[in-house]
Length: 225
Ligand SMILES: *Cc1c(COP(=O)(O)O)cnc(C)c1O
Image (cartoon, rainbow, N blue to C red; front, side):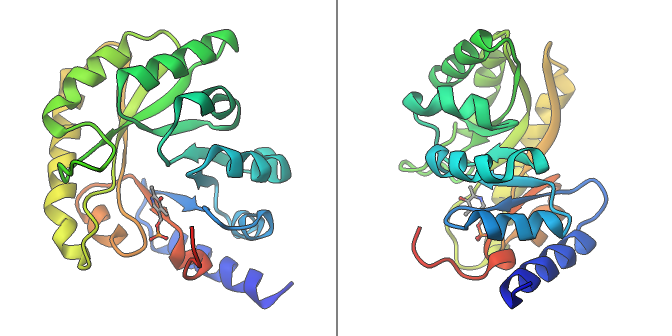
């Protein structure tokens, strides 16, 4: 076993030990090799997060069902067909257009795709995600699709150098999550709140995250990608 694999294993075990009960780790694996992903899985990681369908396809073929696969990138319409065959959950649905495409391909495969709705909690023009004030309307529309289940919300928040500054964005997303939960909409199960990365996962957990997405703290700093 190489020292790099040992380091990945140690990092995963450390994070898993630290996470409170009910908080799940998604290993954010963009730019990482199948071998690195396997080292994380062997240390106990159960969910791999990927940003690019093409890249995920290669790793999924090497790693397969030894983990669950979450899509955490921006999904393009022409990649949906492949995505629904790889992923167990799509965290980044932010339009009825992309939801309908997921629904259409899942109907062909007779399956139901669990999804999270991505919220643009920073209200940034260039960022993906639905605005907080438009989230309920989108959840209601997506819930009408037969082959999709809305299972919660995901947010990135703005790119701030100080993780503590993300707290208000996580807090607002949690409030939205709870508001949607009490609506008890038909075919909507507000179960997962995905927020927080390497620099911000502790703040996110304090603000109610049930999924954290961590890459650099496991694999080391990314070079490119
Ligand atoms: C890369 C990525 C992460 C993890 O970021 P790190 O800072 O490396 O932990 C989390 N979420 C998304 C959507 C990402 O693209």
